[in-house]
Length: 135
Image (cartoon, rainbow, N blue to C red; front, side, top):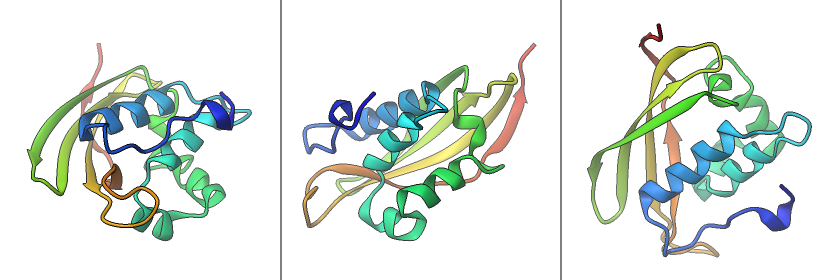
């Protein structure tokens, strides 16, 4: 996946579609190029980018102990927990590459100004909580 192939934030995308784009990208991350991480970064809310960026720092965070199990995970399930006109919260269950099952709280919010005004973008992903083991 090259930069030209990356999806961009768009007000036409729903909050659930944004989460799916990010999870699918992380699931298919190519270690040599980190294209999945780059795709995920593209949908990080500007406030989130200011806190976790720039991109190389964001990539290091994703490769750290709290989030590395998202990289090349086996599967994921997403359930909407709550939604307003400005924010949506999802429970994301991930089966890690090693078969562990963990849960994340994934929050997206509508951007209010700037280049991506009106688009849903991720504001935070809470550290994982173990929810069980696969057989």
